[in-house]
Length: 529
Image (cartoon, rainbow, N blue to C red; front, side, top):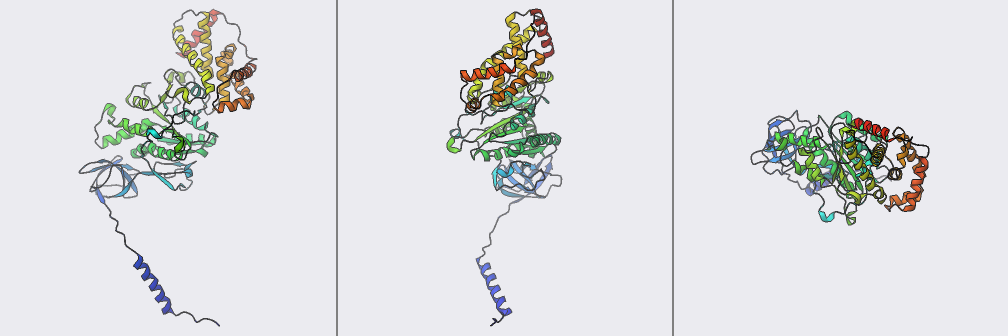
C-alpha cells in the first residue's frame, strides 16, 4: 500500500524550522578592519597614513591584490615596501591591515618547483602543493641548540674539497669579479649532492631571466631539480621582492632542516640584495652611510646568514649550509659589502680573474681563500694528503714570483716549480663534472707522491684522466672507509698509489737539462703574468 505524499505545507514548515534553528545557532562575528590611505607612491615604495596600530614588517594589502611590508613606522606616516606591480596604485587608494607578517609556502611539494618569493609558481606546472606556511623572518637558532660542524659537504671540486673544505652547517662566501665562475661553483656543488641525501635551495636575486633559465636547464639536464627548490626574482621585478627573496628561501630551507634533513642554500647574489635594500632605504629617506649603504646593511645580512647552522641531535640533527655569492669590483675585496660578508661567514672562496684568464678553472685563489672550520669538517683521508699539498702549492707560488725575474734555478727549486705546475694542472676541473671522493683521493695521493712529476705538462690532462679512470678499481672496502671518515691507513695508501702508478706507467718525461728547465719555467711565468 503506497504512503500518501507529504503535503507542500509540511515540507515548507520543516524547511522554515531548520532555517530558524540555523539562524538561532549562528552568532555573527564582528571583525574590525583598519583601513588607511596612500599618500604617495614611488619606485617600489609607498607612503601610507591612517593605520595607527600597524606593526613593524606587518603585511598590508593594497588594491589589485598587491601586498606591501610596513618598513618605516613613524608617528604620522608609514613607509611601505611594495611587493609586486605597483603601477596602478595612486594617492588616495585604500590600504588595509592584514594582521600578519609576510610568510611563504614550505614543504616537500616545493621540490622541483620554481617559485617567486611570494610562493607563486613560475614554472607553469600549476599551484604549489604545500600545507605549511612559515614567516620569512625567523630568529636564528640559539647557541645552545647548535652542534659543532663535523660532517663535510662534498662539492665534487678537488681544489675545494682538498684545500678549502666546507662542512654541513657552515657559511662559506664565494666572491670574485664578474664572469669568474662564481655561480658555476655553486651549481657544481648542487649537482654533487645527487644521491647524498642533501636537499638544495637556489635563490636567484635580481638576475637576468636568461641567466636563471640557463641554471634551471642545467639542473634539469643533470637530474638535480628532483631535490632542488628554485626561488627567483628577476632584474625587472620590484626591489621589495629582491629584498625578501633570500629570507623566503631560507625559511623554505629551514623547514627541511627542522625535519632533521641536510640542506644547502645558495644566494646568487647578495650584491643585488644589498643594492635593492639601499634603493629602498634611500627612497624611504633613511640616512646613507658608506658608499650610500644605510648603517643597518650589516644587520640584514648577519640575521640572514646566522640562520645557517647544524642542529643538535636532540632537535633532529639537521643542517643548513649557506653559500652566499658576492661580486667584487676590480678585485677589491676590501670594499664595504665584501668585508661585511667576510666577517659574517666562516670562510671565503676567492676567484681570481688572472687565473680565469689563464684557463685555470675553477679560478680559485688558494692563497686568499680560507675555511675557518677547516679540517674539522674534512674526511680524515683528505687530511692525510691536503697539508703537504697546500704547502707545496704555496712554495710553488712564491718561487714562481721570484723566477720570473730570470734568476738561475738550482735543482731543488726546479723540482719544486715543476711539481707546483703539476699541482695547478691537477686542480683544474671542467664545469659540471664533479669528482667522487675515491677519485679525488687517488689524484691527490699521486700528486703528493710526485707520481705526476714524470709526466710532461702537455700530457697532464690525459694522465689525470687515466688516474680517474683507474680509481674505479679501488676496492669497495677502502671506499667505504673513506665514506665513514676513517683515516687513510698505510695499506690503503699503498694500494691506491700502486693503482695510480700503474695508470701512469705509459707517461714518461724526457730528460730536461737545467738550462732548458730554466727557460721552460720562465715561459710558464710569462704566460701566468
